[in-house]
Length: 213
Image (cartoon, rainbow, N blue to C red; front, side, top):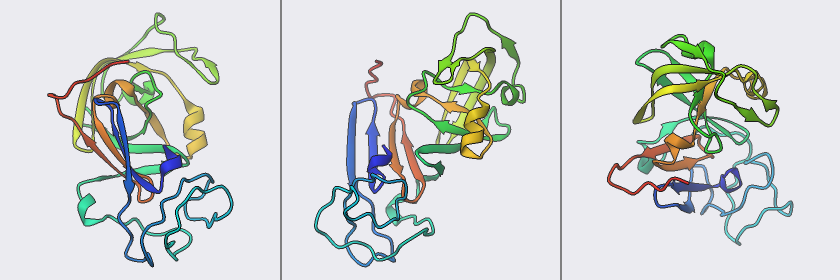
């Protein structure tokens, strides 16, 4: 999705429908936003002629890092953290501590590190669950008895949460990552993403159809 980081992205998972629309212009922009696909590592780099797909419209004059801009119509969106394509959100666990979780639709379910899980619930070793990632199979897998995850304006109680250590993720992001908010949670919601300003919106409607894969 970071390819579309210059747009407001809506992922309507229950209806299996993505949408793109132009982000609200910043007050410092010189003219209408330029709709482009982000094909380099720097959103604010002038990449004309370097792989962008764009239209002939006025490009904002501001270059380099800029302060987060929260447009009036996005005042109810939640600030997030971003490192590269990874999106992270502060999540409260069982009315206790806030921890950073990566939002990952590629994760099979919501998972947590055993150390963080032990702060809020009981954790048990589980040899029946096999977890395999890009680096191979995880050697030690646990389950956490019951955790309620609260982020933005939504919450989900999960029993027998899969728990395993993933130190390489924290190392690569430079942040202490407690786990992943996975597909089983995200697929029930409509999600808005603003990569430019680090904002997200989560909407859950229990009356809408949910179509599991």
